[in-house]
Image 1 (cartoon, rainbow, N blue to C red):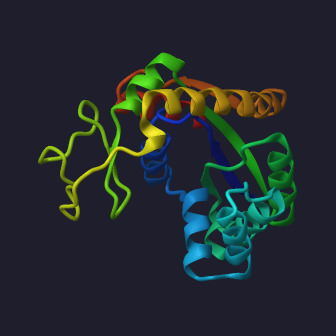
Image 2: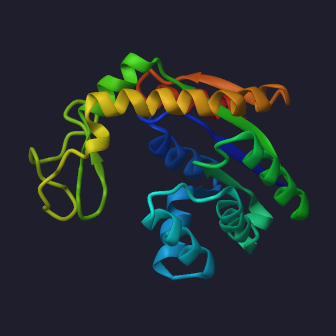
Length: 216
């Protein structure tokens, strides 16, 4: 049976960084919803074109489109045999139920759902200081992840920009929306006794150690 891990955490919790560390330590494929969307858009798949149509109108991509993208990815040989770490999916109980049905089809299951918990004020402080490379989308932070040269991306030398999404008022709203939308999902997995909360205010190495301990 292929085991899957669903990693949860609000914006600014360091979920992407921890997902990379966990996938390497556990030898699991890291599946990011963002990567799946970009792959489908880049390859102009039928699902990618459907998603592009909704995004162009400023609308949310419907669950059935997102679910099918995820189904396509987890049905590949690497994940059918070895499982995966899911990052960014599911986001709602409906998606979680869809995921359970998909995994049943490939003789897989969600083994553990680690949740990286960080208080809202800490998240606002972290995200409000975030700058991003407009070319490769690498995020930076003056305290936790400074570039080698101030204001310049380490990878391609582009000048860093601060997105509208990373300004304090917008950040607070994003966090509020996340907490409101994710609470039912947390409850969904708590009832299955597979949710494990980890303190995300610690340094990166300690969070990683706690996550690995929780999963193993």
